[in-house]
Length: 365
Image 1 (tube, one colour):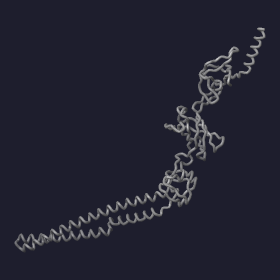
Image 2 (tube, helix red, strand yellow; image 1 turned 90 degrees about the vertical axis):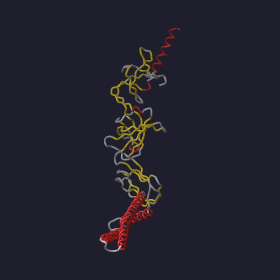
Image 3 (tube, one colour; image 1 turned 135 degrees about the vertical axis):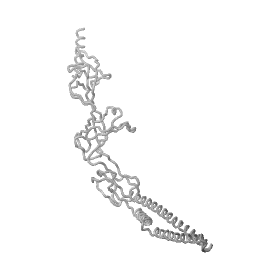
Image 4 (cartoon, helix red, strand yellow; image 1 turned 90 degrees about the horizontal axis):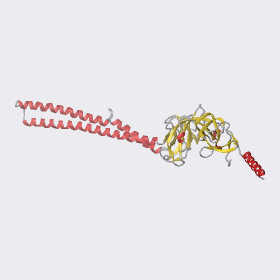
């Protein structure tokens, strides 16, 4: 009876062993990555908005056109500001003429000053003559008094003429400065009806057509640097500490199918997006193979570590607390290990196993 019981236990043990999945460590090159998602954008991408409300009367460029800084993209109807600008320009022209050497107003005042100077000079000489005669007891006191009165009157007229010239000149200069300010304001107001590129690059998208109305600050066009692309990625907050500039990025876009592109991390932004708990990371394509299309979705893996000839086991074989089940001398025991690099499927074992270690899968595998 005892022999039958031992035989039964042996058969149960044998069946259990046959059901256990055995795995042996293998040496492979392991690459540890961090997953990120995002989209392809044009370098220095920006939107152009309308500075005033109005109606588009002309679309000056087409999508895909190369533009230079300041080039007109849209023109809004500008009849009223054009008339205002024309009136301001006319006022400024008249103001400039009034302070020029050919000014009719100043010419009359200059003549008045010259006449006053001439009269004062004559009256001054006449008064001096009567004064000398009176000193010689020649002439009458009345004649001397009349000469002095005329001299003083001429002096006052001379001062008045000069003061009037200076005052008029100042008034005309103030008028010209006011006219300049008015013309500059009118020019700026008119310029707001011409929507221009803020920098040289490519027109990627035009959002309005001729005849459509636009509101102030409404985006009307998408522009950016020609050729060069940026991959704008979102990295989970738990992984951001492992990201460094110049790390290799392997990615594919929705627009390119299964093609794999290579890039390098170029910039890591320090502020977290609280909405999705991610950090923004920029990468640049390498090898001059930037995709043509922008705003296509991206799935990427950022390579944070790479090691050749690693002794690895499947992640599913690793128990909590970094230990494994191994079979030794016909028995299954728990053995602690030290781990290194880790991927979704594989984990590096740096201590505790050899290529010949028989690793038993956990019971739930």
